[in-house]
Image 1 (cartoon, helix red, strand yellow):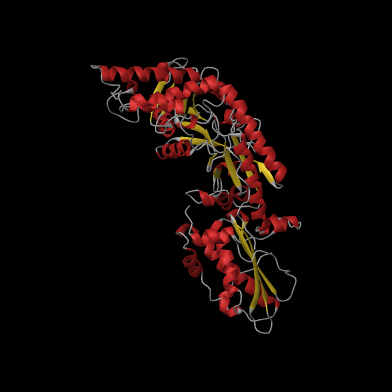
Image 2 (tube, one colour):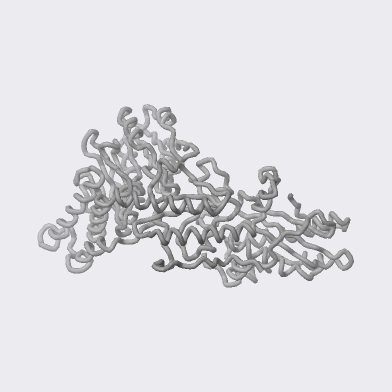
Length: 140
Length: 417
């Protein structure tokens, strides 16, 4: 599989790898995918309660190179955005940025799901009304 | 910032990339190339030309190769039918028997971890009214002879079970299978592609009636293979699947690939001479690789029996790391993975699934195929590099973190997608 340089760069130097304490009030956690399917993404955000800006984003991913790259890119993009802004990110934006081949589009879908799941978790924890768009369930 | 780039040094004498995928194909042995060269250049005749020296030379070379191949597997030269490779040999054996013995019965027995050349051929025959039994395998990859015994009925005409598996290198008990088939009057075909030249294989001692073999798995050229067809006790007949000039005693028409056949003959001759020492050498490298990986990493395991296995094969799962991402990290080493992301079908390895392993284990698997030209220095480099990359990818793996925290991954409600 010939990957784009962008995918290889994110794979070689993944951004924002790590774990946030999910018990904290301002942290939202999204865990999407399944081990049997060959990819699991966990994306976490720390949101400023005043401004609703995502101040920190961390991920860990079990998956192929493009799954790792998609989640790494997702953390880069959501950092500094408000949660509602972050929800505007579409999987197609990720496909475009990383030049993902058709068989890897599901990796970008999973990354979008991970963003929604993390934000959904944070909203639930903090009693913020869900927008219809973030109807992805959180696991774990 | 984290990085997945490996800093493992390349030892002196090791040239990158390293080829360690010898169950996929093997490099041409220089001695084989040397034997082939005249037949690619000056001695170009058609082996079927009966009335000039060009044809006679070619025929002589083909006959010599037939002897070399027959000798390796304990057959006679007349029992060797040349084909374009093992896929064709499997097709010819299975369809040829099915067609020839249709009056006697319509039942074929095979098993679930066969190569697709066998499985897809059987599937096609099912469309034409044949009944196929796919035997399961045990956790070690071997079939249960009792299952086979029970599956044979009065309509069974053929049992086709591989000698060695291409993914996990597991050796099926073909001698016992063949004995059982002969007792029941059933023809026994074996896809012996991975076994011939690597481990002792003898069509008489192993009770084999039809055997598919290939040149390029034993350091010969691609595009040439053979089918062994037993001529006595019992005499096996097959219906030709390619019609034409009546070559190969009518069983397989088409002008013979003389240079390829000469190469295959030479490859078989070398394999016969060097099998014992080479097997010991490869087993040593294989065990060294395994020991180094097990010393450096936790949560890894071998897929398939270690006891009944090809000397050069190692198939391991590196849990909580996905196979394709692992291959990306060791991109100067050529190996294979059972991960869905590396397969054309986007399905994880059906062979590993048949062992009862979860899809997650298949996704994490790597097949190492050690061969004649691999060195100890290469093994040491590959082991060090893998340990390094697996550790780095596990730092990225939410699953590894969860397992280390004591979370049971099977208790989580995952969202399959």
